[in-house]
Length: 327
Ligand code: SF4
Image (cartoon, rainbow, N blue to C red):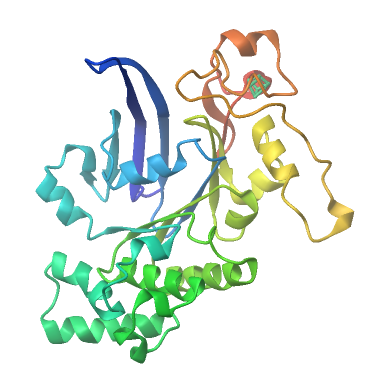
């Protein structure tokens, strides 16, 4: 296998909780706690989990919009975590982000032309005439028209605004796009259009995606592989087909049982998990899912399960599969 485009090793993000007038650090919110994965060129990796599981923090750390507490991120032969601020600014030309709420991320006082030109100005790409041409070209590519360039964000629908957000991410010809819940704020009917657009763009422009979502249903068709996160850790990571057909981790099984399926013959029995997601400032001992897991055993409360491959390309962190692991 070729060298992955992105490789993440032991990534952690701990946010300090301060208390008292002196602001002493009393504890940490372990938003991301030791995750590792790799993404191949041209692949889409879906990252899924409930809110607070650390998926968006992970996305932001990959671009160093948030500094990791520990761990390494390798991208296209460079160790991003070692770059100076200036070098990182340059590297961001190749890694772009699409956000959940396109309205909040588009400056309401700027025309679409100005918004789309900004990344070209920042990275000093082309002269003013070329930049203008590129804006018009990318508006067409994302299914809008040149005449939209002079309009303002509020004059567009939610779906159109997300198309603008996607166009902005594409302006610098990036290699990797990190899409953080890009369709969660959209109506279901519009979600499919935006997902189809992203898939078409991936093929045409040879893009690599990290697609973050809270819903396994949304990432199913766009992802080659899917990672499921729970309380800052990776619970399971597998090829999309394997994960949906044969989920191993009880948490993945519970998430999947809640995804509606169009054919009632294949209805899964809904698996309910007890209780709320615990606080990442005070995660449960042993397996972090043990407070909600219907298959909990004595060992689960005391011993952290190792995240390891149990079948080819299928990794899981759960004591139920201890024996299936290669020794
Ligand atoms: Fe459930 Fe134990 Fe597996 Fe955790 S390790 S998911 S508690 S069976």
